[in-house]
Length: 77
Image (cartoon, rainbow, N blue to C red; front, side):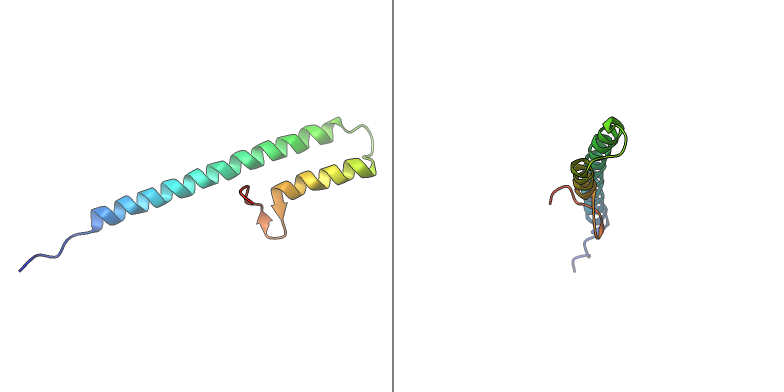
C-alpha cells in the first residue's frame, strides 16, 4: 500500500505566502496613512488662526481619506 503523503511542508509554505501577502497589504496601508496624515499635518500647520469654512471642509475630506465609520479606510477603495 502507498503511504500517506505528508503535506506539512506544503501547508507551511502556503502559510508563509499568505503571511507575506498580509504583511505587504499592511505595509501598503501604513504608507497610505503615513502620506495622508503628513498631508493633513502640513495643511493644518499652514492654517493661520482659526480655519475658514472651506479650510474645515478640506480638513474633513483629508480625515475621511484616512478613516470611515468602520475604522481605518482601505486605500484600495
